[in-house]
Image (cartoon, rainbow, N blue to C red; front, side, top):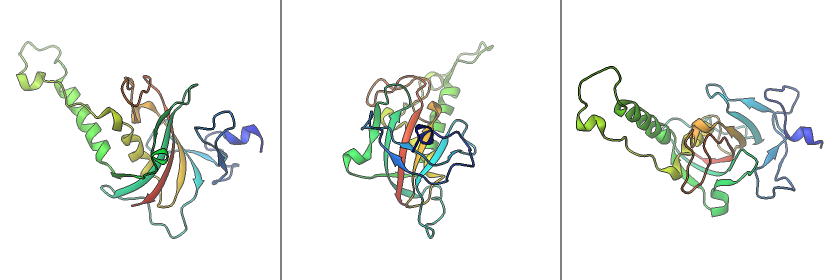
Length: 196
């Protein structure tokens, strides 16, 4: 298979919907590369998906909001280092999460940031409650917003490769604790929905 086949253009209908995947020889720890069609994910600018293993024909639709999902995933930085961000496969234990919880937490945090930012053009003093910093997000789990976006497109038994914009994970600030992710770093995620 030619080198070009492992990096197809987005939305190229001539590429098969499901293809092969492998760990590159020069990067045996990932990220995975895939020869299947790369499609844009509706409603998520900058996010793409490649199906590595299709769900069985009788698999249910994508999980509903608040469904408990069991998932294996590997995530890497999408930059020249390809550093691993997280791996449940290396830990040998699937991760359990409730679909939508991370997104709601993230949105609540963002709303709190806006609500506590200094008001411009007013001379009234802010109350102590208004000036308190917003509750922090668990830096180890910021990528769960990206997992929510991935799982909304998947069916049980499916394994897919995603490219995720920084805004769905560690954002402009990045993370300087574990896992260390530079600012504005996109991620690559190999996600397998085991059950929901």
